[in-house]
Image (cartoon, rainbow over all chains, first blue to last red; front, top):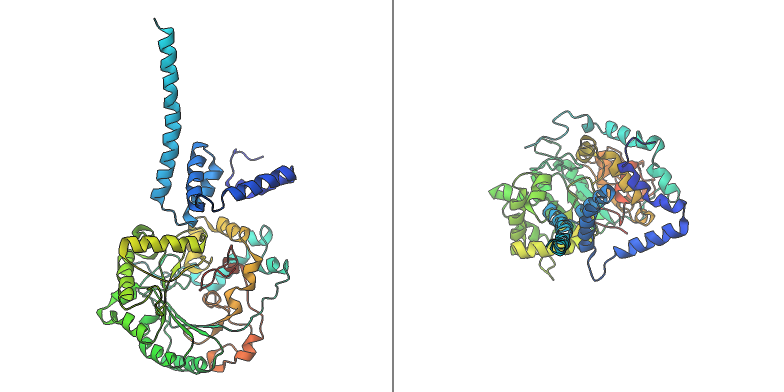
Length: 111
Length: 349
């Protein structure tokens, strides 16, 4: 067994998940492929969304994949970093907005 | 300015060494060789179709030392086509069936007989006469500022490299100051009518990724280039050719030094497209080196893999005999068959 939980080479094996559950695996990859096609959003915009989500999910495979995907599409590093900040802002905002719940609880409990 | 691999006595200046690397390591047991891959779809041996493009390399001298250059070109390269070889080429140009003549380098303009050769070659009336220009050569010396006008005079189709619409990415690949000079050169070409919508003076750009990744969708990149160059610099051009970097010469050196070689080869093979094999450029091209030797393509030229034919030199050129040959392949060929394929004219599938 590998001595680390994540191996970059495992990303290439992603497709193998179909081997243990062909129908569900195929349905997932069909869906995945469809999602990233040009649509109401461009494939370029979707790539930047994926990069931001990859960071909020802290998925090293996804970060590798969508950084490379962005470079292939000519996306600049400044655009990529702004996308990561969008993810970070939502992530921190999502934490902080719960502060309201804390405040509500304090206000309810305190005399 | 950096020096070429050859001037640095780098191990990879030796083409045999490059071929050893491309045939060992991951290709021993992990990944299929290109020959085995195309055998899966009964496309082996690869054979030429109708000859369409005669590509002539006027020399390896260049005023730039681009990080990815498969020619290993630079100011220190002294290999230049002589007038004698040029005359042999002109004889072939007069009688070839090819509809496209494609002059490349190095910087072809640095050959001292470039202007004469263009004038003579243009008399043959070949339908599409391409000169691959690095753009900065137009700005390098005052005496070359008239190159746009000269090219216009002979209705030359200009194809120029531009890795990105931003200064940082362009200069990182092609050298400090290249972006600004290239922009100025493109504006000069626009001024004489090149690249304008509807103009017969064709100006196309070549995009090579500036790193260990493959080019994205050619049309999407073209749209982004067009918008950025128009908005920022009022520049027009016709088409963008997205070309994959092949793992040879300086790009191979970069891949190995940056520890990206294996991942890059995996990426090429994962993106392998049998449909691209059908139209890969070696099937319709003959490449001529500065010293007159014949090759299946520019990349085979840089690996010193001469055509597998009785006719190996421009002095003995015989189109009919040359058509009856097997194309020489190796693992670098995966670069032309990834995704939508890649050629000197961009995607092929």
